View 1 (cartoon, protein in one colour):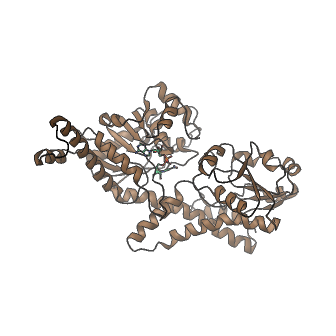
View 2: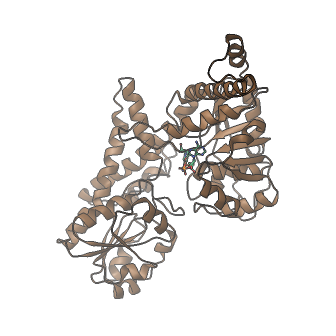
View 3: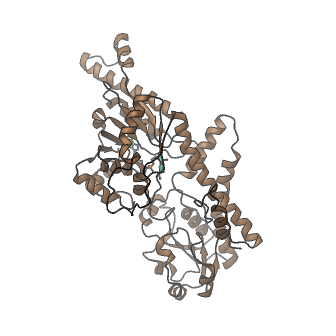
Length: 478
Ligand SMILES: NC(=O)c1ccc[n+]([C@@H]2O[C@H](COP(=O)([O-])OP(=O)(O)OC[C@H]3O[C@@H](n4cnc5c(N)ncnc54)[C@H](O)[C@@H]3O)[C@@H](O)[C@H]2O)c1
């Protein structure tokens, strides 16, 4: 199929590349011209394992193109919307990018044949209907402009022409939420747990099945650089439902994952008081197949571009309907408190924070990504700076994005673990990068002013660290 993907961020770029790899002709559109130029030169603007390799294969096959021009929408069978939907200050969702994309798609659709407009951005329930309205308006505006150009009229169309334009719309809006995880986005897109399609239109359902059939049937040959897929399922479940339910599935899934982590963090606090070890506790809990092992790691809390904004959006939607979603609100609250836990441990250990040097290991909100949106590191760094200490930090890939996101934060960025450790009074593990797990503790101890480790991700064995001569504080390690 011919596909257009509007928005080349974490979701759009990965989706475009994977769909191109499995055989579609994909054109990715972005209004950020600098980003488009970078993509045309074969470079990915984001750090995502395997993505540049995948882009190289697709561009060799000449099935992946990049542009800022929406003209390609006219020939596309399917148009994906993958623009950002950030939070507003009031917790609602900023839908301005979605509006811009939907209107521009409408202005450029063919409108003489069935085309599918897929909303892959995470949007509040009902947004599919809103997108439909915006695309229709875009079509009418586009047609008005064409008619005006033909007739020489600029403002008014006669009733018959307007009616013709309005009844001719043939596009269908489908919700197709995305569940990829940053850091393993390419893998997740080739081997998804499920594909969700929200539309009641039978023809659109068939087109969606056809679009995704290599993924649904797992019939493609994976790129060689992907991890061995021995445990690859024979097929991927397809959930076909209505638009509103598909939109809710995405929010409910993210709310559940965020709540699971907040639950583990709340239990961690109790473990510390009663002398239990949260890692052991959650292992025992997660082995129950009704609960599952994932997302039960206690630490300095969740971050990233999705959990906070999606929880806030879901709370805002519930409140619009006069509901009080207490579990969702508590999950957010626990997460905010959790970011202060590392600071409390620092104060317990060092007593006076003013004039100290504190090293942060990790800035990205999780390993294998350079994304620092709503990363705990930013909050932790800010709190320590406000308490009068100097903050040094090292991250294998996220330094640049951190500098860009928070130029106001006076962080002393370092090129290595050793340089962060040198002269530090304490080190806080903020992101569980693989590199940190194999740190040479003896070397670290030589470099630090006082040997204090606050393990915000519970990556170390406490006894090993203590035996190496450190004061060790994990999370929930009573
Ligand atoms: N990042 C994730 O892990 C993830 C996972 C699942 C779902 N989502 C959802 O997917 C959506 C996209 O997220 P993202 O992280 O990829 O966003 P992003 O901010 O990384 O990328 C969005 C891109 O859209 C472009 N854009 C904005 N307006 C445009 C327009 N009118 N026309 C063309 N391009 C435009 C921007 O320039 C940017 O490149 C969000 O709704 C998000 O909640 C994200």
